[in-house]
Length: 297
Ligand code: CP
Image 1 (cartoon, rainbow, N blue to C red):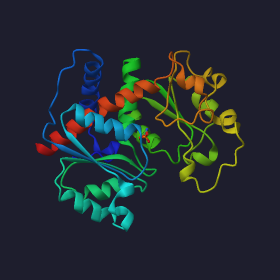
Image 2 (cartoon, protein in one colour):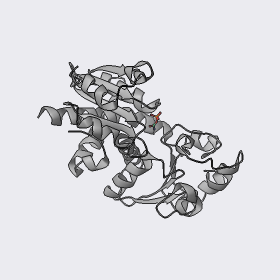
Image 3 (cartoon, protein in one colour):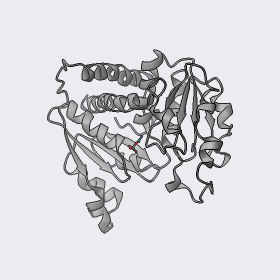
């Protein structure tokens, strides 16, 4: 199977990712780590046409932790720079017979296009403004770990919703797991019925902030330094509107002092940002295991 969108997953497969992810995380936090070589002998290809720190490193770490070998194509030094198309690159990589391929690309639909060519499972690590399903899965795992449930929670997703593949995957996944999602941000950056950030955050259990993807904006927002934070960002005053027990999340990378006050991002009581990164590895271990098992079956 390929993991292109949250829609690629049946309900039971979501559970088959979230449950083992908890076990992987517990195991890797303990000093008595069990060795788990279930992907021994397999080769995972990483093909990242856009920059990444968290997703690239966590897929690589996840594959290594399960005993697989990882080969990462340095796209900047590849024959893409000589004009090779995505499809021709896929045909070339397919001839090398990897056991799974992870792709990030600036174009919506690129992961699906490459999945139509590859004989191995393909995982979408972010396609343009489309989806980033493994980020939503790690976000769900993080929320479930903190609250013990997702059902009934109110999640405010705030910022640049238009360009956020993270938001688009979370808007599919979290309601399937019983949460209510509210969107808040600048009118220009929310095409589907914007509310103000203040309204979205009111009484929320989870406040998930997103950076403005200025690299995808056709025109600059024209905001002066500090203005975005004041009008739309997460400040302590704004966070006070959320439920008293509310937690703060962010997929990263963070632009401190723009969409979030740095002190809130670092706050050990309420910020789950580091836990999200930990779950990034655990969830991607479970995803790699699931897609390769389904493929071998
Ligand atoms: N959250 C996320 O996708 O981060 P990276 O761009 O660093 O991979």
